[in-house]
Image (tube, rainbow, N blue to C red):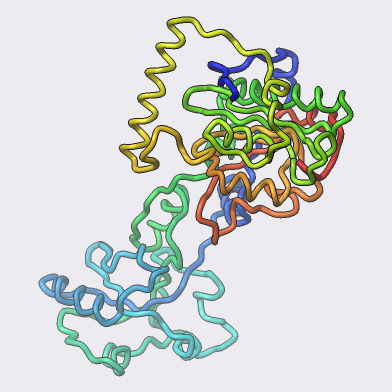
Length: 400
């Protein structure tokens, strides 16, 4: 069984402080969002809606209920608020403008209607004038009449087609039409990433120290004639190194024994599992010298373990003492994992993968971005570029 190493591992100071940058591997949508955030050029996906002034505020509740029932917002538009305060009056959204109505709203087809050219007045309203024909309220609701009491003249307004993805977008959205905004956990802090940062020096040192373990293991593997690829599994909460694996496809003869597969199997062995009998005895060979634990360290470790267990149980993540395989663990790997290893990492429920350099067939950024696939039942973060120079100096190859 592998004995976990307490706290952050020792590492070569020169390697830790060699220049490298941490780059998040994002989905195409997140990359576009980050670029827009950096440039400040926020795109405005808009769609036209019929709206009207509210001339009798006593009718607001009734109108809101009727319109919400008969013209409910679609799933993609539920971020919109039905009513906005537009001094000195209130406006209310009625229903979407249909494609046919978009055409009929303009006398001159060459103007292409303001909504499509993204040219709006300062109040974001296409006003009734020589180039725009807005139907009467009775015509707007001809197919499904409602009590129009309390409504003024209708107009066309362009509203955000989707919810804002970040605070900066929400500021832009708010100037168009009131909408709700729910901040979601992101792969990268957009504000910090836009300034070229994202991690503190302390965190960078921590990440580099674990990657140094993977590089050292890969170097030993390379010295023995292996492919020179290493992987390390870390329990972020306790700081323990749980497994150190290297590519064994040549030494053990198994085509599936890439570095990540070996490291995952080592973790499984600690939990009473393990699929590859040929890896028995590899733990002692792969693991660097263990640090002895003092009595104080042992007591602290026990406290952390119990705290971790209670946290998992209270959150419903697990009901036993051990998580499912690598749930919540970090993986540090010298080269970008292939599709097989990436799927193994996903099914092991890792929380984050850090890798040094890209691989031609890599599945976490180069050839594919498996962790971003919307159909998967588990998501994890991916960062590249950790000690990239040292990783590239190892034997290159597409398999990890």
